[in-house]
Amino acid sequence: MNRIDLSRVDLNLLTAFETLYQEQSVSKAAERLYLGQSAMSHTLGRLRKLFDDVLLERQGQQMRPTRKADELYLAVHEVLSVIRDRVLDQSAFTPATWEGAVRIGLNDYCELVYARALFERILADAPQAQVSFVTVNRGNAADLLKAGKLDMALGHWPEAMDELEVQDVYIEKHVCLFDNRVLQKPLPLSLQDYLDIPHALVTPEGELSGNVDSILAQQGLSRKVSLGCSRFISLLNLLKGARLLSVVPETLSYIDDSQQPLHHCEPPVAVGDFSISLAWRKSDSAHPVLSWLKQLMNDVVLQERHRILDKEQE
Image (tube, rainbow, N blue to C red; front, side, top):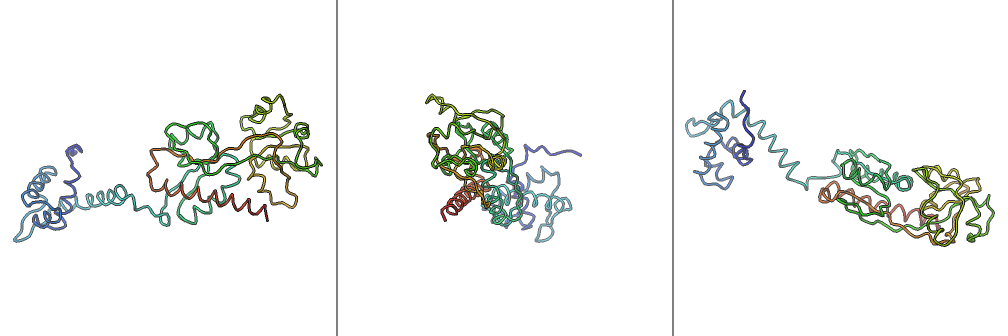
């Protein structure tokens, strides 16, 4: 069976065939497509040559489709419908009826604090959607986004990331987190107490130093890091009942709703604030799903953070 060379197929030809088949009249098809009758007759000639079939043959005052035309119409109409509804009509995206999947990268802190609220809101807006949370860090987030393995990432991205858009959601500050039932220190902590108490930190790569140590070194100071762990949820459990202190994002320090929550205060050393930001591929910026997801994540993160902070102040 001879295959038709796709380079010979003009989408307008398929649209013309669909219209000719539906109208079964050259003049009516020409009027519907805003063409002259001679131009439509020429187009019918091209279609006949392309498909090696008369397609429409005159019977009295009407033109009747051939068997080949009947077979072609079903396929052509389906293809054109897909192009109109799913390729050209980008406004057709409606979260309530959408059945796709979203892949969201979250750093460890954001996963612990925001994953539940994000999942609940996505499912409320798009009940047929699937959600995949992927743990990311500064080292792999950009690569996963560029490779199309993530739709959106939420975290702290201090370095510029080529091919990606970054939008700050809010500015986070650091606090000291500890179990003062064990430490029994006056608050806020003095610099000497801060340096004397053994420190714990989250270190996915296993290193036992970080940005805080660099800041202290610039002032001729140092701390003792006694513990490193890979996840914040583990850190929160390890701090309870232990003679340990950790410098963590402020919002994280408020999520412990147990009867004996950990204590927190501002560090006696200026650790610095940091941004929590959304990142996505520049090439995806205009996609309706990404536009919806970006706005949703921005709103949910801000609302959830305010809820957590307001609850602490009650």
